[in-house]
Length: 223
Image (tube, rainbow, N blue to C red; front, side, top):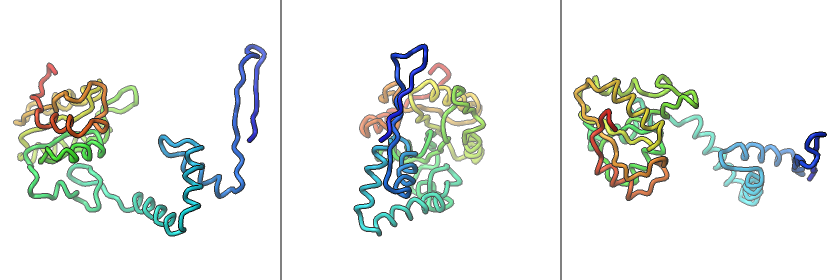
């Protein structure tokens, strides 16, 4: 471990300490670099994971590597709702038992998984791929909003449910969609605010989320 200390002439009392970790193998160092690039994983955790893999049978590491390669190369996006799928149409959209008249609009795949885990929703979905956020440079053109219009033009949809995060960006996105499509003969509703304002949907407990779906409210410009 190499510790470098730096102080300038103005703030001699302050030190900037850089810790450089030495690895006995360049292969190990490369593995740590790649693992630590994942969200929420620092270099110490990456090193612990790498060392754990080295203690496992070679087949275990090979299966992990192959599953990641397959994830990147083989996973598809559903043409109807933009969900992850093994086929061109996902299992939810291709399920005849699901209600075609109700479309639940969510931000990403994690929200679909959260709602499905409640077992309270029997309609279909449309994944926007994010939410309108000028601060992050995300506008309506970056979202899958045209897919909503396509579904409405098909004529079978009777209700759009906004299941977006209870944040300013989530509310802005819902309002934009409502204004854009309010002239269609479709009802707009929003999941009941059993989800706390400011919370991300994926972190809500299943009971609260399920009740929010069941007790959804009509959506209007005053919301």
